[in-house]
Image 1 (cartoon, one colour):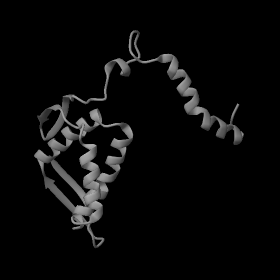
Image 2 (cartoon, helix red, strand yellow; image 1 turned 90 degrees about the horizontal axis):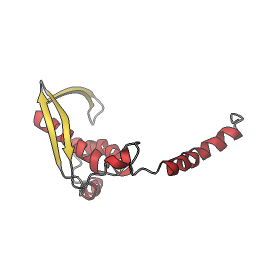
Image 3 (spheres, one colour; image 1 turned 60 degrees about the vertical axis):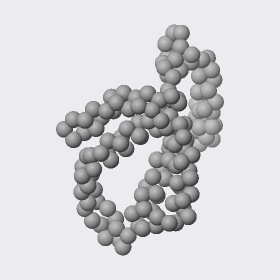
Image 4 (cartoon, one colour; image 1 turned 120 degrees about the vertical axis):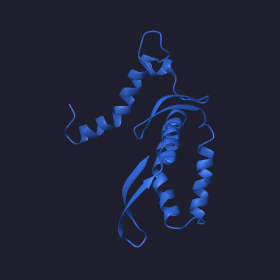
Length: 147
């Protein structure tokens, strides 16, 4: 629950800040785990990328900016499927996820395993791999690296 970091202040001076926030760290850890379980990959990636922008707006006193309001709208929409239960282990200052479940979880065991009887179409995967690598194969050939 302790965050020890070097921050860049608005006027350009670096400062060392130490925050004791065990509750916040626990909630953020649990929430991010639920996001990993329920958000589509590109949406999750975009959200992670805009988090520092949002933090800078707030840290720099720009709470009433139109960008912060627009980001709030994005966050509100993106969080609709993020609901569920996360089981945490709290031990010696660490918050560790030990289990999770969500009604809108995108993880499906039958698709995530590569075993006999799973739902994953292995023949389709071979075609996808060929198509996915095709642009780089062409690039490599044009560079004289292809065989």
